Image (cartoon, rainbow, N blue to C red; front, side):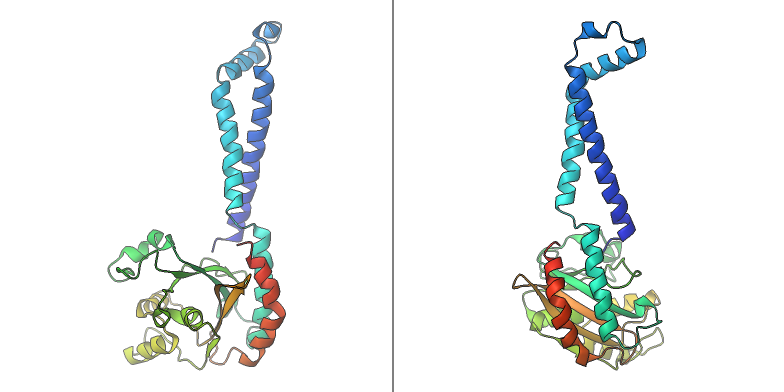
Length: 282
């Protein structure tokens, strides 16, 4: 999940590049049509500039085309910020609806995250942590093309740099995390009253937490190393877009009873139809 400010700046840069490319093409095209004799009465500096443009016209036109085509291609395959912000606002409403302790608390303690299923996800190759022996995540079965649940948007204005992805192979029982449990079973999954896991927690507590939430041990250890205790209550349900399984919505809370499970179905009925339409743009 990229930072919105970064995305906004990138969109402005792409618009600027398109503007430069279109302006350059018009100027070069106009200058090329001028005869050299017509430039004899022009000021020396302007005449030399126009002659330079005429001599380098093929290269300048090619550059102008690149400046117009590349931004247009990038825009076509990226999601506009306005769509992501609209989805985020819907998730904010969803969080306030189902998280009972979210008011006046940190955003990070009560979150709603949308995970998209991707059959191939090469992003794990660019995570330096995955190249260490301790956290090496791959095998013949577990590889970038074996199916992954990838975070795409999250409620709140903080914690936008989520990099945790969950393995979601065709074999449902092997799906990782609570997101993987909802994806593998194709139905809602809930759990609460989980223990508070810290660096001082025993291995028995950690292993029980991993078993109850179906979370790999290395992910729990990563949370602990970063001084970020894992959530104590979860709810997750599969999300359909255009009638097809698209991904998973995960609600997590640092409170042991921080999610009102009775409100989830009502919130889903009210918000998921609009959310599904917005997600068509991703």
